[in-house]
Image (cartoon, rainbow, N blue to C red; front, side, top):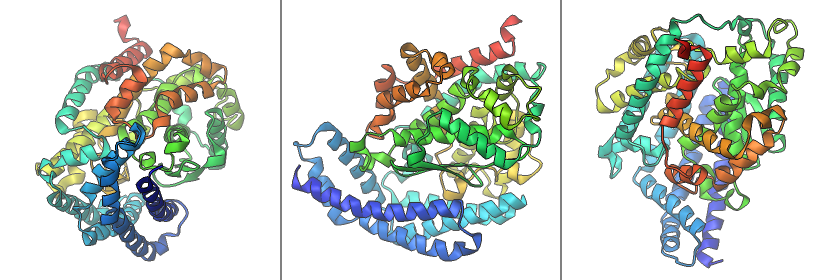
Length: 499
C-alpha cells in the first residue's frame, strides 16, 4: 500500500479516537448521565469537539487527501473514500473554529433544555435555544461558498443531490396520491386498537423488546438496547452500535415499533464490509438510505401479518391479561390502523409523510424568511390543523415532540419520507428474489438480512444514494413505487375498492 495512504490511515486513527470519546459521552448524556452534570460535561465536550475540528480540517490532512485524489494507483473504492472525505473537508474548513465550538456547546445545552421543556410541556424553556440555533445555522451559511443556496445546502448535507425543487416534486406526488385515500378512510368505520392503551408494565415491555430483537437477528454481541427520551441509534463503530427506545406504560405498540425501527438502523452499520468499517464511509451513509432501512424494518416487514407468526403467541404469554381476547389478525390490523394523530413516531404509514411534509414546509419557511420565528409553535399547530385536522393540546405533542431541532438537524426530516420511498423500491426488488412472507413465517429473517447486506449494507456510504438504488434494484428511484404500495395496501385494508 502506498505510503500516503498509510499516513492517512494513521491520521484517521487519531480522529477516530476523538470521535469515540465524544460519541460515548454523547450517548451517555442522552441515556444514563445525570442531568445535573450537563453544564460541566457540555463545556468539556465542546472543547474536545474543537480539538477534533482542528485535526479534521488541518492542512496536513488536506495535503494527504489531495495527493490521494490524484493517485491513479488507488482502486475505485479507495478513490471514492477519498472523494467523499475531501468534499466534506473542503466545506468544513470554511467554518471558523470559534464559531464551531460555540455552536457545539449550544446544541448540547439545547438538548438539555428541550428535554426539560418536553417533560414540563413548556415551549418557552426551549424557545430561546431554538431561535439561537436557527440564527447560527443562518450565520453558518454566510461562511460557505455555496451558502447563497440557503436551505438546499442543508438538504444536500443529509441527502446528497437533493434540493427543494426535488422534494417539492416528491411531496406533491404524495399529496396527490395519498390525501384522497386518507379522506376516504376517515369516513370509514375505524379499526379497534383499544387493547394498545391497557396497562403494560415497562419491565415486561423490555422482555418483549428482547424477544423481538432476537427474532430479527439483532447482533447482541456488538450492540445494546438502552432507554432515552427520544429513540435513536448511535453507531460508535461496527462492533459497538447502540440502540435506544422509550417506553410508555399505556402504549404497547409505541416501543415495539421504535425498537424495530432502530434495529433497522443498527443492522445497516453491523453489516458494512470489514474493509470499509474503519474508513470514512462507515459513518457517511446518507440519511435517506439509513432511514430506508429503519422504515423497511418497521413498516414493510413488521406491519405485515407473517412477521408476527413466530412472535404473537410469545407476546401473549408476556401479556396474557391484556391480550387474551386479541387475535393475531386483530393485532396486525390494529398496528396498520389509519388515524390522523399528533405524534410522528407513532403515526401510521399512510399519514406519516404528512407529518414530514409539515416539518419540511416549516424548515423551508425558516430559511427563506417567510415564517415568523416568534410564532413557530403556533404555526406548527396551524399546519397540523391544515393537513391532519387536529391540534395538540400540549407542547410535548406539538413542536416539542422531536429532538431533531435541538441539535440543529435542519434538512434531516424530509429523508424520513424519502427513505420510506426508497424502501418500497427495495422491497419490490427483494420480492423478486425472496418469498418475504415465507421467510418471516419460517423464522428465516436472516435470509432477508443477507439480501440487504449483499445489495445495500456492505457498501456503507461508498455510493451516492442514486447509485446505490440502481445497484440494489436495477432501476433509478421511482417514488410511484411508494405511493402505489400505500394506496394498494390501505385500499384493501379498508375496502375502498369495494365502492
